[in-house]
Figure 1 (cartoon, rainbow, N blue to C red):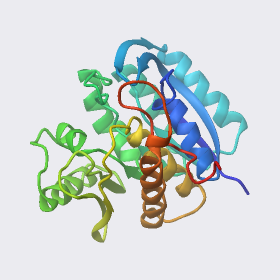
Figure 2 (figure 1 turned 60 degrees about the horizontal axis):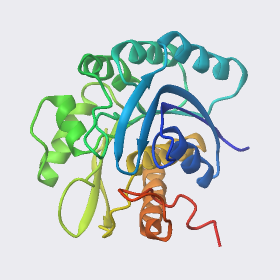
Figure 3 (figure 1 turned 180 degrees about the horizontal axis):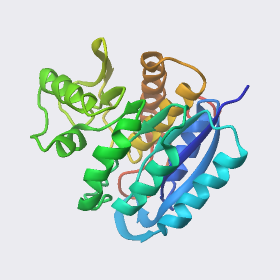
Length: 265
């Protein structure tokens, strides 16, 4: 049976991040993707120039329309923009049995804010406890905890544990913003911390890596994989996608990763 995965996130018209990247990543990982939009953005590989909010009631209507009709095997929550949208997303997902991946999208790669300040508390208090896996990068983990950005493995693991203590079943602290030859991610679960390393790839084309990783993870969880195995598969997928990014010619800034590098001739 092919898994059905719902992404709740914003749109990127250049196709590299947001809903567009989510649907590509879900498809590349062998699942059927669906989408409920929280915001429309005007953005390209050089940055975000505008954000148009979808009314919260309509966000809720999109989610309800899918859940009322389709078997949903996993959900990925990405850009939620503000507190009202965060509340209706939490209301729609509370009590559901499927795996939920929460990717706390807070700042675009070019520096634009994608989460309003009043939404951080709602994300932390209502969405984080619903997460089967929470997937913050280093700045996001620090912002959610009100701490400095982790600079060591010990600090990454400690912040993952602190976020897990707030209710997430598992926390994947992503090390892509770190330094060194290896990009190491830390999965903190009930049994402790597990590390997933990969060589750091020299490319400017990394637009949408977080969206794509979390969506691939949701696809694998929806297929029934346990969290550690799902992280391993999602991490391998995004590594291939980054390695193949320079074969695409999309834009003049931070281009997208190549979601279908292993599938296209």
